[in-house]
Image 1 (cartoon, one colour):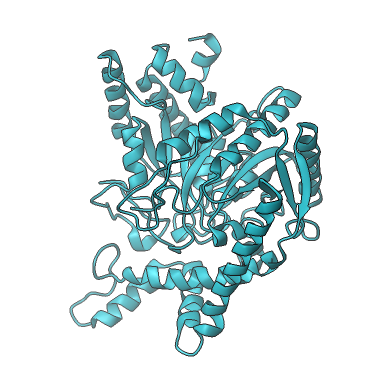
Image 2 (spheres, rainbow, N blue to C red):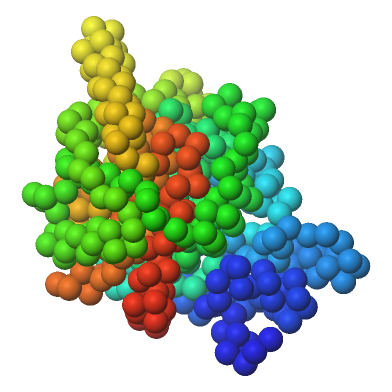
Length: 502
């Protein structure tokens, strides 16, 4: 192991760490301890984690080291630490979904994603902070307080998966798991200068993922580089018979695509409706430069129109609350989690009402009420039914666009990271933050966000969104890898290296 690696294991990529552990240059225990020490040093200011499972992590790392010494065959990411968003169940470890209603609940089983991380011999460091039940674009709606963006601790790290993005951007973990319902992997990646992928819906199992909106939620990988993201994607993806939404088809070779990183002859579609008015000048500038870069790398850039995208936000904020109101009905104070007012005199109905009032935050209550209204008798067809028709039109827009282009691109988010507290009292302004990411979730196809530079007006990261057809996730990594390599050559390093030290 060279001296620079030894000096700071936390700044190495997952691929480098995996190689060093496999070669015996460093032990999995040393790598894990270095990241636990980093969490101890900085997480009080970042608040990326809700639960750190230090003892279990070290035991897993020691087990990897013992098996390596015994000559066992281990996975390509064996011994590499990872953080998991607190919406995925993990046996015996508190799973709160960022809500008081689940405070202290310890699931009796592992989600499929967690099972696959364990099977890949990865070291789970703990659970990351999130907007309550994944409802939010800033992690300010967590019942346990906001996470902070390592680029500027006064700003949001995105949402709902701000904890996972902040953990990797602050070098507390090289990898993380996020979930993306309307952009909750990609938008945090954009504002923290990291990489995040929403796989094709059904490409990664949803078993053990606490549902917000069942037709939209998708777990996916978060990392600091395209290759690291691909390695994690390969570890967690694939068919799961326990999940009825899981796709029974081979996982695209995302790792080979990330390594190939070649866009020559590729048709890249510029989505006319995702840009222009409402987008920060610095975001638009860096995006235009990324388009020029793609052309210089040999891609063919064509403009495409997706006319129904303008209705995506409205449709999404009817479909999501409707599914949320149905899914969150299980949190009733009767079966598990919080129970309020059970004094022997109150009825079941009263206890349920008091529990939900105390356990759910303002944003969750807002969306449950919208959803219950949209699903109510006399309004179902006018609201939920119409929104589903819009969803069909958006899916058709994507299909038509993918006939003209192999991938589509846009800015990931209209602005860079805003200040904590700036939009929390304005739900509409918060919702608009996901305007470019939502169409992908409605259609169920795959998308990536990767950093393309800093906005000149505020020095904060800007993300590029790459979208691909269903089960063509490898195209994301092909394009993302090419852009990342070209920008790294230009800058002499990955963008994340410019993050201020904490």
